[in-house]
Length: 496
Ligand SMILES: Cc1cc2nc3c(=O)[nH]c(=O)nc-3n(C[C@H](O)[C@H](O)[C@H](O)COP(=O)(O)OP(=O)(O)OC[C@H]3O[C@@H](n4cnc5c(N)ncnc54)[C@H](O)[C@@H]3O)c2cc1C
Image (cartoon, rainbow, N blue to C red; front, top):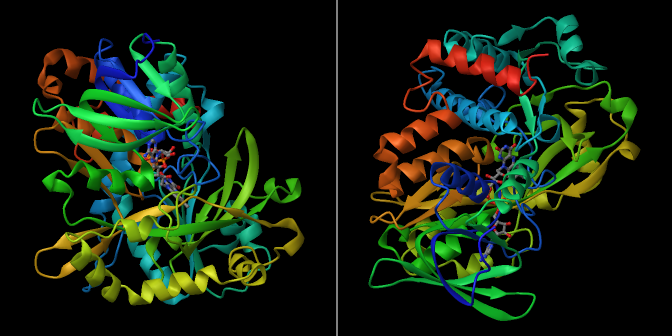
């Protein structure tokens, strides 16, 4: 552990937030250069208590296997698979680094990852045609070569008994990838930070809320954080800052006043699950079953019925049901949205609001639904579901990005976006999906953009030790994919 931070200290790296993103960046940087002085500032009293906590997200290892929104259909009817390929390749890189951590004894597989087949399930002629065509396109690519497709009800009942029990669909179909995953991103964050805390040159400061940051004449950043416990201020000067504050990253980015922050706004969306701990149900469902988003619904509200492993125990979760909120964090303030409106993003927010009036309407209606209405949605996937087996649990907040566009005012984005200062001294991560699953890829790209040392042979060699495919494209290099996937499945126990 680093010698204790004084009220005013000079360090190499400050990471704001202790979620999966900061934990991953801290781990990678420490492996690349153990001499870097790294401080992680977290406002809460625990690591990963916001979006990265297992109850706050869906725990899907997003690989494009089951999420139909990653393969949109163009106006000419063609299914576009590029985004699914990119997400699949990025997720494989996360698996590489997690497998490396398992081999080093830093993470334990049973604590954070479980093979959970990823299934896309649709009904009705139009949707079945879409799924068949999607399968035909994806399956030709080596990344998706193991995907299965079926319209046979007996086979579907074998893949997902609860879903097919009492199912009245005349025509339905599903695709399945056996080695899809359920991931506890909170457990990964806690595992990485616990390891780092035992190392020299790393310090985690809980209950420290970053309140302001400003760039000094020498290019370093001065960060002021309030110790919420002792009501004292801590001032740090750092060469590099990462804003890994989840939903709150936008507000901090605005405080940094870097020109690259201009024009960004945030659109918060809350979430709810229906959760069941009934062991009889749990043993009859071993999959993540994703459907198609209802017309007018945002992609992140695609319903899914999932086997989850949280704190080592299995559960079934259905949802998330999206809803309207003005908070940027689960523990945030109702004023977050209003406070994020600035003169430079007002136009973008207004345009995005006007263009997405249907979405806002949808979210308000969703937020007003009662349990009986939510159970109705669940019964589309599990017709025999009983009210008594399910309870409502609050999920995390997502802050979707609103972005300025030159000709159209502003638009709402559903992805994850990295914003970097031109001089490489600050980076922030905005947005949600595919989020935690692609955290390694996102953090590696920050290192590439902000740390010139990444060009050295020494750093590249170290990066390849953690991620053997580093420097090649898993989309193009079939032999490399075969090699790393085989190793990942075996090390992470996903091939049984
Ligand atoms: C409902 C839902 C479902 C999701 N499903 C999936 C999924 O299935 N698969 C997937 O890959 N991703 C999913 N995501 C997205 C994923 O959870 C996020 O992308 C990821 O957890 C973000 O990690 P993070 O480290 O950026 O943020 P967080 O985990 O939110 O961490 C940010 C931390 O910063 C702290 N903080 C905030 N402000 C300050 C401050 N001023 N000073 C100090 N600390 C601060 C917070 O307390 C928090 O601990 C989902 C998200 C939601 C909400």
